[in-house]
Length: 210
Ligand code: AP5
Image 1 (tube, helix red, strand yellow):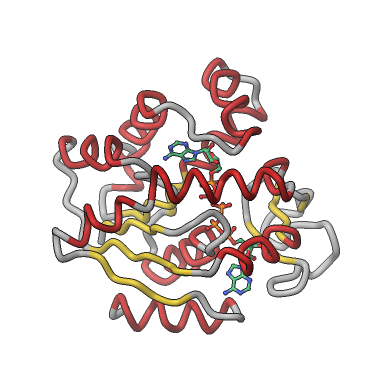
Image 2 (cartoon, helix red, strand yellow):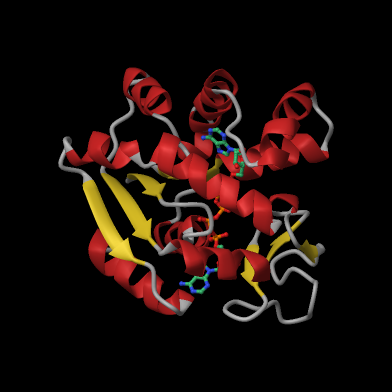
């Protein structure tokens, strides 16, 4: 199954992608995680992406389309994948179409902006493996330590309140038009993000029929 998860920053795409990945045994492909890894490693790509990411803007379509194309060609993606954070512009969606990729479902997770702002302040992300937590809704077993790999679970630089507001604005301008793009294909499904992670996961699984 090839899936796209759509939703505002902090809507819970990464959290649900991890759950679907565990259930279906297909990889979560997060362009945000790949870009953060490149920034952490100080690669040329990371250096190009850093300024845009720090300010809450989008990284250029050319860069992101390039890394996505390489990633979906890897062997672990041959039986399907979950795209988390891609596409984010109509140009990226068109690029995916022109790669000949068949998408089964586009799942939008809808959450009101105020709840998103509350969530971002409590998010913690593993600096080593990218696993996502929340101090209240999905805490690590040991404070500040990733359950999955033992790495440091820290706040993301772009989760500062003023950056979150600008990311929400970018989402409305650049990414929200993708809902109409995929509605036309009949593949768009929408779930309402719930107060508890497990309740959203239940709805997501039911909606996808998995
Ligand atoms: P990216 O990493 O993709 O960030 P994002 O889309 O802004 O999404 P987030 O990771 O912030 O949120 P999420 O929806 O995954 O929510 P999560 O599950 O963590 O991108 C970062 C940057 O990279 C972009 O700003 C851009 O610069 C660049 N970039 C990436 N892809 C790009 C592209 N294609 N084109 C151009 N630029 C690109 O959940 C949030 C928090 O809430 C967590 O703490 C979680 O535990 C908690 N939570 C989740 N669900 C629930 C629930 N139901 N109840 C309570 N808490 C919950």
